[in-house]
Image (tube, rainbow, N blue to C red; front, side, top):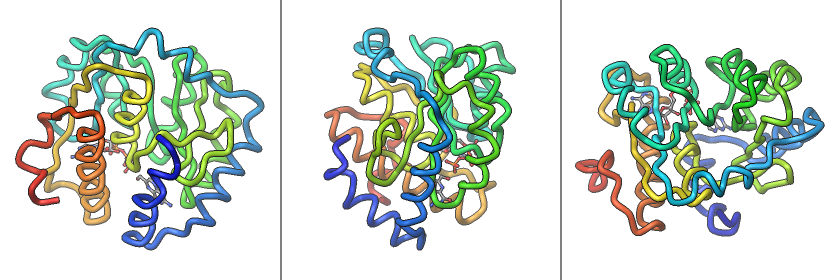
Amino acid sequence: MNFDEWEPVYERILADFGFDRAGDERARDVCRSLLDAAFDVESLRDDVAGSSVAVVGAAPSLEREVDRAADADHVFAASTAADVCLDHGVDVDLMVTDLDKNPETAVDLTREGTPVAAHAHGDNIPLLRTWLPRFASEATLPTTQAAPAPPVTNFGGFTDGDRAAFLADHLGADALVFVGWDFEDSSVEPTKAKKLRWAARLLTWLESRRDDRFAVLDGHRESL
Ligand SMILES: Nc1ncnc2c1ncn2[C@@H]1O[C@H](COP(=O)(O)OP(=O)(O)OP(=O)(O)O)[C@@H](O)[C@H]1O
Ligand SMILES: Nc1nc2c(c(=O)[nH]1)N=C(CO)CN2
């Protein structure tokens, strides 16, 4: 994702949530200062290009359908979806997280050599300072929603799950298969519900950029 294309969407997200752009930039710079190396995401391209990627979200429905993730060539798991996959014997190829729920899982994965896309934003700076030093940096892919500052990269996307989809798209995935997504989930609190609406909007944008059709969005496009 070119930042010029992302920036107008990012500005709308900032305005909608009242987030501070300078905070996101500060987080990006803190993240940069905490890592002495970073995962080379392009090393995944040969493997992921042309393949199917399960983009695994952490809706309650994931427990029932996690096996579907194992049918894809690769599994990109968002936040606590990584734990559900691992608990069910489904290997995770990449985890995407902003460190607010299960940072221990992310630490363990990086130490085993599984890449983790660790997202820096204005509201997780203390988490970055606590957890990033424990990550194996060569398996850590630092991301930002502000302008990129290598090695901190911006592939597009906002919530952990839709960022996983934008990353799979960046790597040339042929099919994105959404497992563990529920846009109607009434168990989420209002801010999370608002974040999920943004995830749906961003995935609608992504499918049109790819000239694709994500079944998970059926019945939701019209209300966005
Ligand atoms: N019904 C749902 N409830 C929660 N997450 C969902 C749901 N449907 C899809 N997802 C996706 O699963 C991802 C992981 O959810 P989880 O609750 O573990 O993470 P989170 O750390 O709160 O996510 P985020 O920080 O992005 O809000 C979310 O980022 C979202 O993209
Ligand atoms: N500044 C800021 N950025 C975010 C936040 C958040 O709470 N604050 N939450 C996200 C996904 O949960 C993604 N990005």
